[in-house]
Length: 213
Image (cartoon, rainbow, N blue to C red; front, side, top):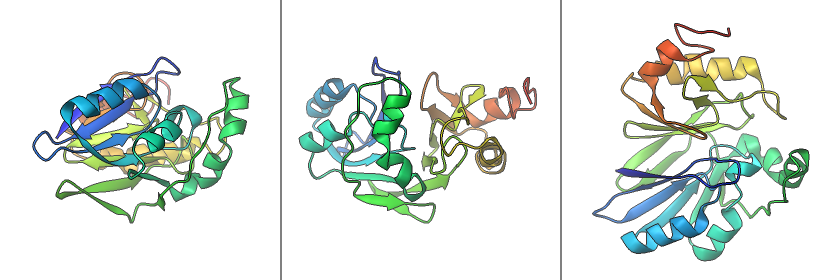
């Protein structure tokens, strides 16, 4: 599997295009913008986009959905069931940040941790990680974890927005993500990538050498 990272100018929320060069199957983790750049890449590589997997329903991770669905009408958009209400209030979120309003689209399937996603001959594991939002999830593909805004490089996602909860994010990271193997690469929702082993030691909140908590 190859992971290509795209970072839009607005809010710099990371998009990750995951694809297999031989079979041409592809999926997108979050849909935060950079649409034309991603469209061009998909066309150049002749990829077949099957899924858009949303890590959580904050507007900055959903800004490109409408345009993507128009471009790829057969793509399946998946999001956690627990973030359904948050998704219904995208306009309120935008107003809170003084941002232009983002148009939502119909989600093809609301999922939870029991969902196994078949992709390119393998299963993608959905890991429920509430805390940044009630429905935040991470996606584990081989040795690659797409953490959304739950786990950052030496940091964690903020918990002061609607449905956020510090105790829940603590449990999600300590009892779920930190139980994964150290070698797992972490592709974060904002900023630089990291790995589980590094975060177990250096995370500012929950690592062995924590500075804040």
